[in-house]
Length: 175
Image (cartoon, rainbow, N blue to C red):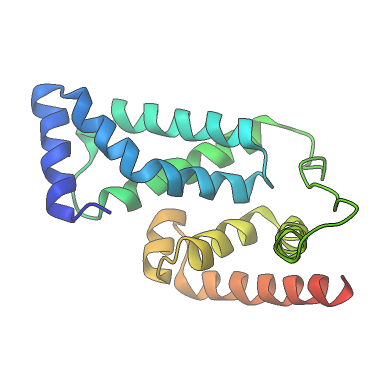
């Protein structure tokens, strides 16, 4: 994890000297978390997640000069990722199907079962609930940061988290 000062140094090198290696270091720092964010939103579709992450980094590189440094680079990057995902969703008219959710094998291990249970529970959430759950629980972001990424009020985010927890608990109880 880069410090804010390290991020700003790398961003300065990118903007002032067109240092692509510096941007590569930013990509290396954020790629695993951003990919996990997309994997949760796409219900495990690795190819789509990789495509969305790549598009996010391309847009971030192109728009890097517009980064003001008012927030962390990660917050700004997640905002681009959030917009990228919902732009993709708007371009796709059909709704999500559960083809990406794997069926349990004949003799799954406990961790595999737990993973499938969580995946199934996440599949039952709306897209915005999945987004908020991913950012809050998986990426461990505070509500204030999620609010700046999504543009929603913290009270709205709390409502989405509450509903998501209830839906997931109900799904997990029936499993």
